[in-house]
Length: 295
Image 1 (cartoon, rainbow, N blue to C red):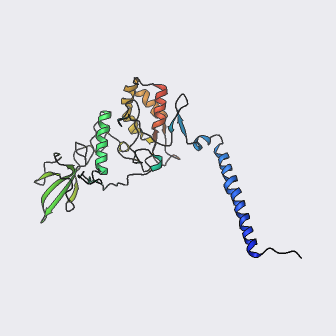
Image 2 (image 1 turned 180 degrees about the vertical axis):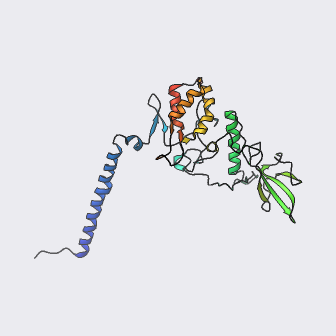
Image 3 (image 1 turned 135 degrees about the horizontal axis):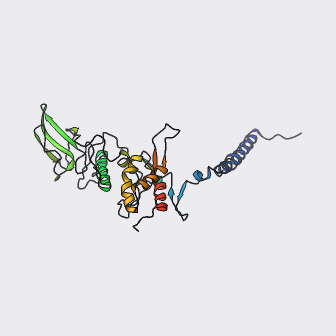
C-alpha cells in the first residue's frame, strides 16, 4: 500500500513549487523579455537613458533631464542657452526630484535673524522677482514684474490698523536698513522690516506697481518645474536668449533661431501641454554648428 505524504508536508511542497515557478517566470523570464523589448530598434535609446553625446561621442547628459550651464561660480555661461530654475536638490538632482512646495500666497520672506538657522528664506515672490531681474540684466531687457520692487524683492506691505485706521505700515520683504519701495501708504510712513520682529497682526497687502502686465522675461525663466528636472524651456525664453548666444558665438541671431526651431517639439498628441525647446540638445547643436569664440 502506497504511503501518503502528510497533509502538512504536501502543503509545504506546493508552496515551494509555487515559489520556484514564480521565481523563474517573474524573476528571470519576465525581466529578460522586457530587456529584449527595450533593445528593439526605436526603443533602445530611451531604454538606455536617452544619453546625449558630443560630436566626439562623449556622454554629456540625458535629453530627458535638465542641467545647468553655468561656470564654477554659478554664473551663466554666455555662449549657452540657460535652463529654467530647478528646486531639485542643488539643481537638477535626479535623486531629489521635486518642487519647492511654495504657492502663490507665499509672498512674505523669512528675514535672516541672528542665531536662527531656519531664517533667511526668501518667499516664492522674492525668488521670482530676483530671478527676473537677473535674467533681465543678462539678456539686456526690462526685468521688472508686477508685485516686485526695483531691487528684486516682493513688493508686499504689512498694514496694521487701529480702530479701522492705518496706524503702521512695514515693507515686509525689505529688511532694515533697506529703503522701502514706497515712502508712504494711506498717509502713513512705510518702514523697513526688522528681522525677528513679529508682524503677525499685520494684513499682507501686495502692491502691483507699474511693471508691464506681460513682462519681457517669460514665466518659465523665473519658476521651477514640478519635478525640478524639466529639460525644456519655452520658445519665448529661447528667443529671448538668442541674441546673447549669437553674439558669444560670432553668428547671427537668425542662424541661432533656426537651431531653436529645429530643437522645438510641439504639443503631445497635438493638444497636450505647450511647445518646448530641449536646452541640452540645442546647446550641443550650437557647439557643432557654431563653436564659441571663447574657451
